[in-house]
Image 1: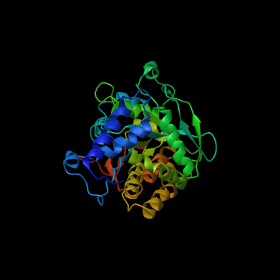
Image 2 (image 1 turned 135 degrees about the horizontal axis):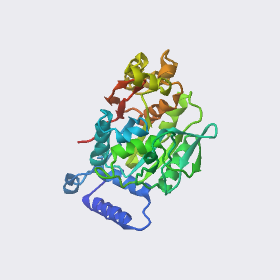
Image 3 (image 1 turned 90 degrees about the vertical axis):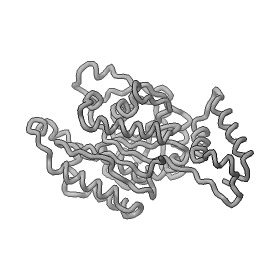
Image 4 (image 1 turned 180 degrees about the vertical axis):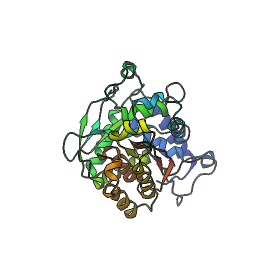
Length: 332
């Protein structure tokens, strides 16, 4: 897109305001326009660009969060709590997205070779856990969906040859537990739509999940924040034993280190191969007896494209690891 003078920029700004103030706001259209203007500065208005100067829209980064269990939202003294808060502030104060698309370990499609997309505007919380105190099942997290953005996601998936079907559901604890910390209604409230997208039903196909992420890369250019939620290491079978002994399992350390190495390797085929190789490691079935908590980061790698990945923080603990990652950079 070429800009030839400040008048056109002003006209587009007026258009943005008109869309924003309209009662039937299309979140997808607004996301695309706000993405463009996020990169414009006052100097652009004072010094019109020449025709040969191309304005390039910035991309939102991609985050992988290790979300923990339902109790994580109450454990303010746990080291992961302030780290999730920090990521949340980075998103709301620096990235400033128009919407969020999230993939969680706790939603695998029921149909084979199909992705399910939440098209509901009203998203109640899904208390998809058992045996916890009563107040856990009374938790609230204010949120809204976006049927328009959900349709955009389905369009992109279809263009990539991925079958997608609409579903109406709530947000599972792989979303609302970390989001209650990251986007605390009291300290860092979130007022933008959230659309959740499923994983594939096959939790052994890493390549398919990288392809899934690639299919929605364009969302990053439309000011949509993609967050993938899982765990760097997730072995519930050994959880109670490690809580009794206080031991951190060797696989929690070794697999956590291997994930960091894979994520931070050269983007492209090298990284994709390294990520797929994680599922074939000797310690992989100890670190992840099933792979649904691992595969969200493969989606993240696909969304990231050629952007580098970086481990923001980690903590191998018991039979878990809390690795938090970001792909791409955040503008100051």
